[in-house]
Length: 120
Image (tube, rainbow, N blue to C red; front, top):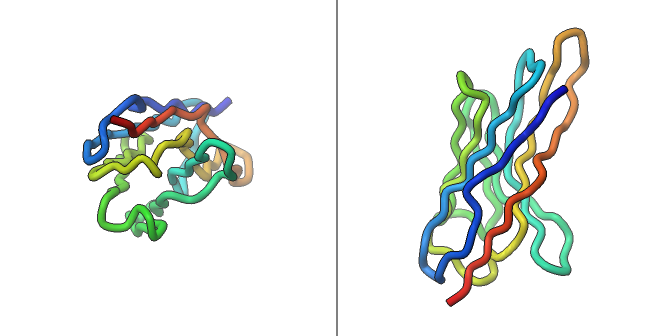
């Protein structure tokens, strides 16, 4: 069993910052790519940022320059630091990880989501 648990969402004013964290636990042999996706109200889920096991990062155009993704391989965690938040950043944010369990192939796992609301 593998679980991804997010934390750090909430209500913030425009221009503010939030830090999202995600911890993977369970029978994990290794983790490849990790990332954050979001689903704004009434819209489809979209990529925010990804990070490889070697810390190569990729950001959506809307996240570039404002968000920073990082990971701690020893703790199996991934973090998204979000600065200069805008109302358009309002969404449910989901953690994603490509995880290899012992004696298993790599599979994708999702967290349960954490809500971020940017409003004055």
